[in-house]
Length: 584
Ligand SMILES: NC(=O)C1=CN([C@@H]2O[C@H](COP(=O)(O)OP(=O)(O)OC[C@H]3O[C@@H](n4cnc5c(N)ncnc54)[C@H](OP(=O)(O)O)[C@@H]3O)[C@@H](O)[C@H]2O)C=CC1
Ligand SMILES: O=C1O[C@H](COP(=O)(O)O)[C@@H](O)[C@H](O)[C@H]1O
Image 1 (cartoon, protein in one colour):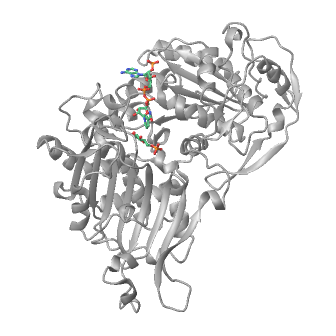
Image 2 (cartoon, rainbow, N blue to C red):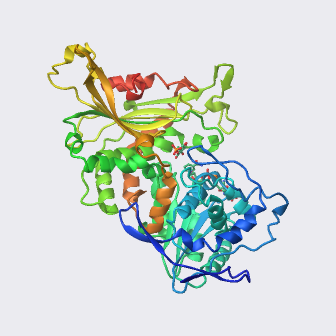
Image 3 (cartoon, rainbow, N blue to C red):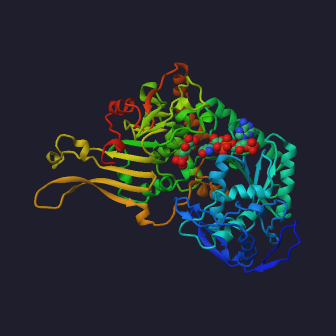
């Protein structure tokens, strides 16, 4: 029997609970033992009683389905933050503890992604039994105010609504807040004392998530590592992008971080690596005999990595203008997918084996040339009586900005497998649709017997494999097929694995997978410093040239399909964008 007590701040009586354990398969493939939900069954009534006082409001699952869950933020007169001390479970003798500190807790990413992901992990029993979450930022807040803030963005999965209210309340009890400056060792020392109090003298593991602007990364790492590291367990730091803005600044960041942390402690996050379909890319390739033999220049004509958003930089113009779409999306998210797509078979699924192969691919690539790039920027547009702002209409963006909000590029890998195959990337904001996908166009069938059934346009008969990362995750293969009937008419149809039909359950958010991996010390989906160097080496000369030559972006209307130049670029390499083919 394990013990569940109120925390040291409170005198409430203890309750006991059974310590049944579940076994779960981790994302790394390992089995792990997880405390059962029933641990909380005796604790829950107390929490339910607290939340009965609170009114209902509508929450949505991450699928957008409404949930009639209870919010702890909607408290009205019950909101006296000092009224009741939080109750933390007392930690079992000898147990280890996990403290997750979200630095920049008051910010957009923390609210939108990190706290909801932590709650989802808690809900699904992926977090260790003894954990606490601490928000840290400069904004003055107390624990209750942080909980109110967090509770606004917590959702339960549509298929897991049972005990949602209780679980939210239990999770929020584990969350507390410390306000401090990012460069103050004294404030981090205070944080350390608070964490120690919660950890109750047990072996402690500490995870810091830097959800802050990059100019304060190093200050925080210095203060956290010198004043708030764990003295008994591990300390890890998740660092958010941008990791510099070119090779030099990235090297400088790595050098500074490594003054305080070892490479093993640094978890550079690229949330696209946590997306379900990106994870599945290696499974598809290496566990199906039908794909891997085709995975080379012998059968693949081109590969397209496409990212588009149907909204602009609204609200993030200040950040975006200093980076642009090439740094924001291509140098990291799309290039990481490319590396996974094109790498050789790793020796094992071990993080270092996979990252070794990714680095090799990146280092085999030709640095980007100006003539292999097209850049664009969205302009204001009116449609159906509604007007959409141009990029430079954003008050935080200089009126004469030439920062690209769209880019298309052709990349090449100079190795035996991929020699001559164009890898086309396209990324843009304020386009006609939101999507992210990988498209693989295969070569024409040699001596195609059915050529005349397709007319002269052989491209229409090309097999194409599409991995739709979002929205509506799917893998489909365009094949040629006989239209049933007495004649001989062919058409192109899809072999379609639509996730929502095959796996009718909500897919975890990328941040859930990545946070869990960081907790488990699984580094496979995080970027190693040599990968980062190789990635910047490909893009830095191009970025410098674009900036030095002040290359003006081609304007495209908000909500359109992007600049025409992207088509010319593709045509130059004998490629047609698959997403604009009309039978997407
Ligand atoms: N938002 C998003 O969708 C994404 C964000 N990222 C990255 O994640 C990190 C956090 O992003 P986001 O939450 O949007 O960032 P925010 O701009 O919301 O900043 C987070 C917090 O940092 C503090 N802060 C902001 N500006 C400064 C400053 N100039 N000096 C000191 N502190 C400051 C604020 O907290 P306080 O004032 O309370 O201290 C703020 O709440 C960034 O590195 C960003 O590039 C990556 C992918 C997507
Ligand atoms: O890293 C970033 O990603 C988001 C897009 O992420 P998604 O998971 O919603 O597809 C993008 O909007 C942002 O500009 C960029 O910094």
